[in-house]
Image 1 (spheres, helix red, strand yellow):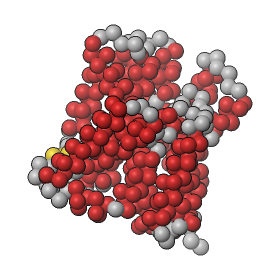
Image 2 (tube, one colour):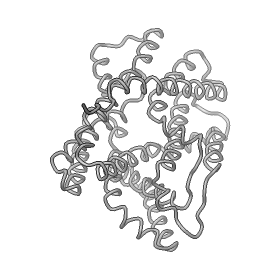
Image 3 (cartoon, rainbow, N blue to C red):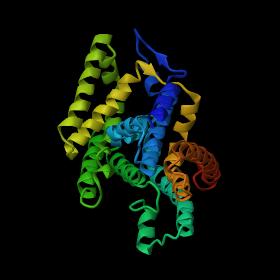
Length: 348
């Protein structure tokens, strides 16, 4: 399995830019770079799910790869949350209240509609494989509280975070720092509530969304300080790296998991100011993270049922090819649907 990680590293290096003396302050948070990094992390998500279908491993290289996947854990989704919070806050500052008012339709409803349509093939495949879904489970799955064999916790979290954002910036729109504080407080409340019903992975990384918002609000001050010179940048990176490893080793309690996620998010952001990933393949993957995230378990489920799981290379190659094809088709269909349901109304 380590071969797949090595291949991903090589792919990330193709077209990458290393700034030895200076910093890529703006490019590190540009759409091009963040999409490429999303592409890296969505592939890590896929490798994590691949591991769950193809373990246990016997070869030493596979064991090492499995260990890497275990060590990364929930960190593979951290940047999706951070970039979402950052991007939303940047858009609010640029577009204002009109953008905030569009959240219930263009963020919450749109995400839910796309997610529910992606549930259909899981439901059909499940029935063909002999799975019977109770009505209660189907209803819960429609709102991403449960699943039909797909990944769901991240979608549920994003729906809630979008609602928190809409509420906070509607009530406190003119006071963006207070609105971000309210989003943070509501997110902590979400963590406390969800912890009573779901596993830790449902909530241990969600504060990275609020971190992205705070980074947006204080971007000028943060970036100017960290990139003042190489010495300051190195010290900050070393502190974050130490915090990342210490929080991972000291305990697996929720507080340390949250600290680990926050350190990792900032480490990636500051690291990308020196090592900027520019790769068209990864950018395409990053633009289709939603589709890949939602659909990747479907071919894995079918291929595993067909008996391909023991054949790791064939299984992964087939799962990847089918996932990308499905993602392209699903993305195309959603664009057609969005042009009907979510297109801006033309002024009369």
